[in-house]
Image (cartoon, rainbow, N blue to C red):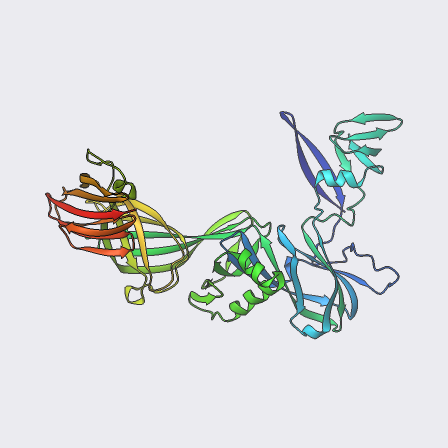
Length: 491
């Protein structure tokens, strides 16, 4: 009985199909599989294989830095003594130096003597390379003709009879698969086992190609005072493996820092310790090192080359504060401006206090917040988006929605005098005009450089930093307000 595989090669503008007839290959979870580790003089070493059919559980911890931790539990038959175990179905982008295997039945009875990672994968090109100098058969018009492969580099060169040919002759028949070619990336262990019979083993490793990010969808109410917030986790799997019904956990942080801090194996161990503390059931979150670990509430399947969205959080009726902010610049104090500076916009921001009493109060991973609001017809319209950083509980999230259309500002420098060497007196007048049908308060943020002192000001201010002040200026609907102040600056 034969298994048939077809491979397509693209050459020039056309496609040439090379049909490959292969001998029967047993699945990894079934009969004997030739091992690539030679036992040498010890003839008692048995060759075994395990595939995804033996898998009893898998969990994946994903960082938002293109890396993930995979924990694969399988039930396999291991004889007492030495055995070569081929562990198939692992991620193509596995980091071999992080692999660890242990017996869950009795850890003290299973010892790893040697570990290999085989990633020389089966492809038409690799298969031809392995048979260079050897005889295979060509299937032509229903007749098998022997040919000898002379070269497979940059095209096929073969001998038929006493003549040399190039190009693809048609369907090629190979006698079997070389032992050192695998259809999937494979881990290979030389094990010393003290138990006999069936036992559960756990393989743990880090792999590249797993990533996640948070996305948030927010809907403002009519008065811009409440917001419904929905959080989503977007998982991206390019690791080269599919994880069926996996328990998924997420770490908000940079895995490279964790690995550098503890080393590869210790990093895996720390992650497992943190995972063990997560209770089942509802979505959970906990602090882990200088990061946060999130556990999803149900198993999910993450297919290879798939982007999946999973619900992260839902919070309705979250109180928000809408703010108008107008920012100045330090260079206004260093030169004369005789004309109004009118090219600055008044920014519109929405602030959310990440507190339990606001139906939040959990560490929010960084991501993009997209905000919508219903128009007069009740249809949701997109009104702005911003990217937030990792935000712990009891901190404030500031989302910039855009620039105001009906609230405008104009800055005019009313005085600039040099009092002495490096000493200046500067005065400004900022006109704020509100064309909305509701009152508005505009926060005017002025960075003041050097050693400064406020001489005159029309509105109260708050010194928010050493070189920054903020004025909150109320502006009536369809009205105008003018803020003026004078400072002395020493450079």
